[in-house]
Image 1 (tube, rainbow, N blue to C red):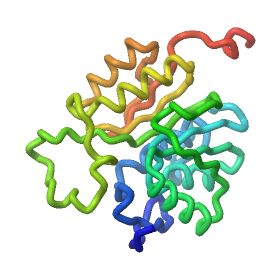
Image 2 (cartoon, rainbow, N blue to C red):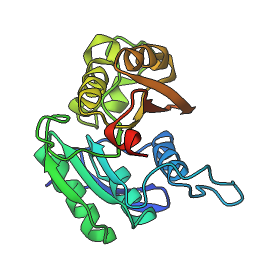
Image 3 (cartoon, rainbow, N blue to C red):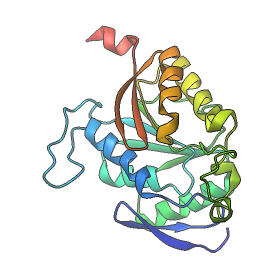
Image 4 (cartoon, rainbow, N blue to C red):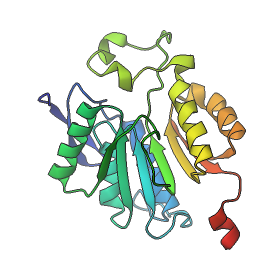
Length: 221
């Protein structure tokens, strides 16, 4: 593994190498959104929302990269079972090192989105590649320090996100929390609607989607 530097994310230092994306402040809102669904306050003085996730939620972080989201969730929600996946073996090695350093219990698996995932989860979180190479406001020289596979996607930056939404819908995953540029949110919401999801809330770059069809668990209540 390449020698890396440390970047702070949600109050903890994570090792970052050229094999993974550099964590950004907007991604911390994914953690905030999960804590809110779990009925926990994510800021001092902020009243938590109603508890929606089950007591011991199973959460999958797709495209984990450095592991910053999955590890933070494991430490903030010790009652949860967290799995982190990535298509890149090098990225998974970085994430595993971070988990060991921060003493976080995570299950790791190599997978292209949900292709090698067998377990069904209560919630999927994902900061997938969503940058369109044609965006003229993107500083490609600055982004050259990060792996292109973690940054860029076709179809206006939405190809991989749309594929995950489709896969999650077929698996009847109840909640999806995704990061994307706000200029893409309308298209993602349309794709989600076509795959039986509706928008529950937005938090800056982050969208919280909920499955709009009843599941077996819903019918049993």
